[in-house]
Image (cartoon, rainbow, N blue to C red; front, side, top):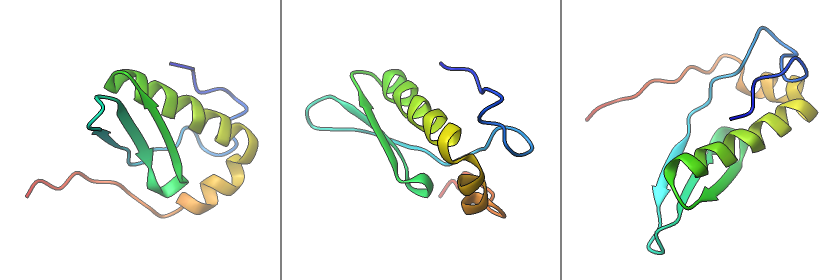
Length: 81
């Protein structure tokens, strides 16, 4: 996985986002982050997550301040029902 670089860290450090991973009927895995409208896929769950992380790293490198503003004040929890 790519490291969080200083170009990404335009704020107080790395961001935390909620990610969903689904396995399709074709066996491919899709990972997505609704908050950042980012999607990636892979042959395995790990590969899909790696691709999504790479996409988010690129997004943060280009638009870090805007992304941080969009995510400001949000926190993420896992709710078991």
